[in-house]
Amino acid sequence: MRVLHTSDWHIGRTFHGRDLLADQETVLSGLADTVTDERVDVVVIAGDLYDRAMPSGEAVETCMRVLRRLRQAGAQLVITPGNHDSAARVGAFAEFATAGGLHLHTRISGLHEPVVVEDEHGPVAFYGIPYLEPDPARQVLDSTVDRVPGAGTVEGRGHAAVLTEAMNRIRAELSGRCARTRAIVLAHAFVTGGQGSESERRIAVGGVEQVPGTVFDGADYVALGHLHGPQRLDEHLRYSGSPLAYSFSEAEHRKSVWLIDLDADGLAGVERRELPVPRALATVEGRLEDLLTVAEHTAVEDCYLSATLTDEVRPLEAMRRLQQRFPYAVHLEWKPAGGRATASLRYSEALRGRDDRDLAETFVADCRGTEPTESERALLAEALRAVQASEVRA
Image 1: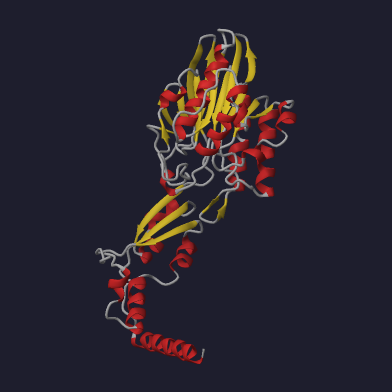
Image 2: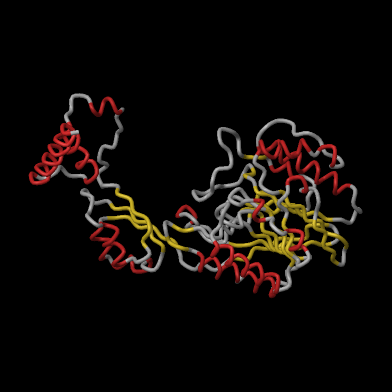
């Protein structure tokens, strides 16, 4: 059997305000060609199908078109929700979708119930663990102990505790199957050893979010989601990463999917297939005038661009001017050369002994990098007088 592992589609996400739906549909629909060319039997999507719990109508329509193409290419689909998804919405009509080859694993109480697909060597059980928010998941898992064979209560708190109990239930269910059954587990989690990026939303508040890879012992392959860079933690334990870059920290990522081969004994091999890049990411640094004129930057004119300006004085309308040459410039920082002092003061220290006019003039100087001109000082003084007069009338 051949399985394609992907995750973190984040359909509906924007990139610094730029709509990515067209790029997402192009890349994800191309997976249908991979399914056909590589003779893929099952596509697994390990969470974060959408970028938000309530996706827009356009995002849902895009997702449905992509899933339809993958199904028409001949693959069955197994999906679990991630921390960005609403499990209830992703799992709507799950029982009906199963008949069409779309298997939605969204219920915590049913995470031990696999989809079983047969090949010439026997059954392959696909277990989907939806994203487990520790406290709500513990309540559900503890409340179903009497109804799930081999289940126990959650020992401890945090992600590791609920995932440990989830895998205990999966291993117990798997042990009751024939010895020839191979197991693939989908999970959305931060596994120790993984490398994060700037575009992932943290999945722990005031606690430890990472879980050890040993939690997943017993599976032939673990298809992980959550981290956006493709990576191998062990031969059977991998992140596919997101299909597109969602932050400039991912500029060097080679976006890809994993092709997993199973034989009679379990995992037979894993191969990587890189994905196309609709628009590359690039960063530049320098004075604004240089960025607008230097020939060496021609190669990044059609990239999503993050620019760091080193002008001693903050340039006026910098983004508008930058976009005249780089239409896909989306992010701008100002870090003046020479290392202007940026030491922060406490609020009380910053105000001590200073009047409103002095504070306003200092604000202009800090933001722009130069002191206000005499005409600007006069305008600030006039504005402050107007404010004081209105306060007296009130």
